[in-house]
Image 1 (spheres, rainbow, N blue to C red):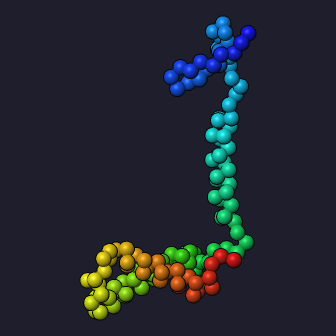
Image 2 (cartoon, helix red, strand yellow):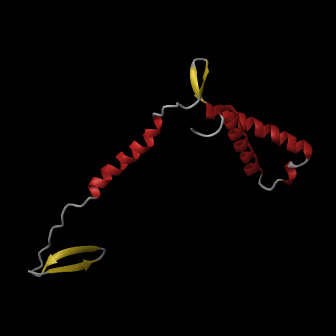
Image 3 (cartoon, helix red, strand yellow):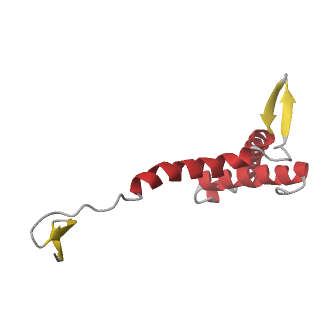
Length: 122
């Protein structure tokens, strides 16, 4: 009994010389299809339980994450900078205004975060 590998289309089949198909051992694909999402969920959700909790502010009994407040203040700072640019005459010279003002908002938000909370994660 000899083994012959025949290629039919995109599938490869193991067959004996008599033409009988040989069953392959059970593949790992179904096991990986269940294991990979479970592993990814574990890794992603592991950040939810940290010893130093994320900074929050209490407004009217509800806790808001500090990044939301920093982002809102960053947008306000970008709007203020736009007013300064218009008065100074720089607004007309900006090539991509949306990108410039979004970058200003991001810089202001990250700057506020570093100012209030003393830098990055510890």
